[in-house]
Amino acid sequence: MSDETGPSAADRPVIAIGLGLIAVAAVVVWQSWTLRASFGNQTLGPQMMPFLVGALLLLFGVLTIIAGLRGAAPPREAADWTSVVWIAGGLAVMILLIRTAGLIPACAALFAATARAFGSRRPAVDLAIGAAMGLVVYLFFVRLLGLTLPSGLTESWI
Image (tube, rainbow, N blue to C red; front, side):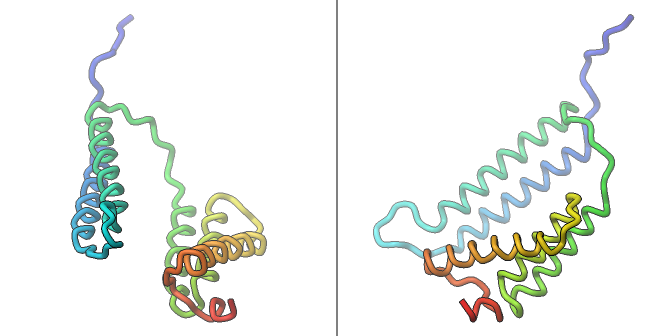
């Protein structure tokens, strides 16, 4: 009986994901340098959060590459391409709707498509939940924080 506890082969897809995370981190940090807004004498300005996100992406990218080199990633399940298509289609519909119909219907469409990808069979309920979540997000950012979000037909009534 032999005990094979030697090093596992490197997991190339996991390493590729880690490299992708590092590339996204580099883009986030690079784009963060262009933010020049300030709020008075505050030390922490609008650049802080993108830099934090970039640093975390870099950290997770490095950790993912290390896991891939060690072959320590958990076994993967078979891909469910139907779910991927539902989510990608929901994102595409959101992009198409956000400027014309507005943020709320776009969020509703994305939520319903994602719920369908995860097995929901109640499209009307999913659209209602997505619209309610979109409304909360819209009201929070626009009314409470005073930020500008894409407004369409539905937001003109609010």
